[in-house]
Image (cartoon, rainbow, N blue to C red):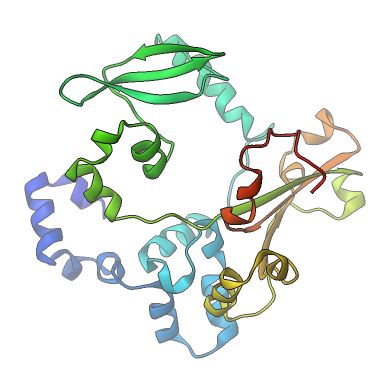
Amino acid sequence: MPVLKIIPSPIAKFLVYSGLISRLSYFFRYGPRSLAEVVNGLTQNEDLRAVFCYIFGTYGNIPKEASFSMHSLLLCHYMPGAWYPKGGASEIAFHMIPIIEKAGGAVLVRAPVNRILLNDAKEAIGVSVMKGHEEVHVHAPIVISDAGVFNTYQQLLPKEVQAMPAIQKQLSFVKHGEGGLSVFLGLDGTKEELGLEAKNYWVFTENNLDELMEGYRKEEREEAIKSVPLIFIASPSAKDPTWEQRKPGKSTLSLVSFAPYSWFEEWKDDKVKNRGAD
């Protein structure tokens, strides 16, 4: 609701914490309700319920655990259609870099951050990055982390800071999302020859999405992979109008589904591209 960003912060907080905001906006009224709760109240038709909820895989929470308001925002985003950058997603970074550098910034690659630097007041003052085996300190007045709340607080901060009540309180509000598995395929043939279209497909084996996913979660790896409940299918090359000029006679396909980290944990210490035959 844009008005909350316009009015003074104390008034906005009062409206939210008092519950009065729900009288002013349907969005906030539905905010505490799950997607499944709202949709199940609208229809008894299982197929229609699945149509309303199918896109939950985009953010990873099953319908009974997902916020209806969050889901509605996503649907509103897709209703007029979606966009794909010419040249692929890497073009976003390529066009951002000159702007950052023009403003006096720098973009580092292959420089993983191993910790956030703090002053004596426990305030972030920069990051430490690895340059080969050397640790390099990069100082900044503001540090913004996009590594996720768990990685930021539990991997990049020292133990004594992780234990601070303010940090623990924030962590108590969130949980780990579902694990995802992505498969990227390179194909011989044009999109016309292979029948690939600039569309996203969500494929489900059944229409009861909550039960479908909960059953999948409980199964062991060997059994679960025999009946994957859903899969997302898209062709990035079919969406890119410049693809044929850059990669003639070739196409790509992306497949995404859910898979818990525990299925792959036994290989966590192996090097990428150097794993065993298993």
